[in-house]
Image (cartoon, rainbow, N blue to C red):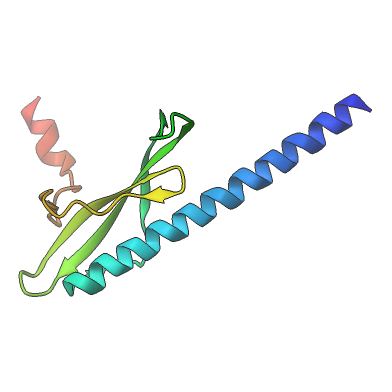
Length: 121
């Protein structure tokens, strides 16, 4: 009886955690879309990527999770792709830092030519 009760509680905790994670990711996507709409740029893939989760204390002194999401956008005037970060502490989203320089993404940044790499050794 005790084992089945513990298993049931674990399943319930997992379901609640999954629901909160999905809700917070939807919030991050909405923030990314709002940022892109205000700045007249195109959000790529209409999605965000979770890059970091850190347990911290919030302003009230309670433990919560700090989630950092990254989203990519395309600026047509410059014909370049950039990325920005969204920070969510607990259920509260921090404003996107306008002073932070966006990361410029080049198309060849992730391409490794193994033929050239093997010549260097």
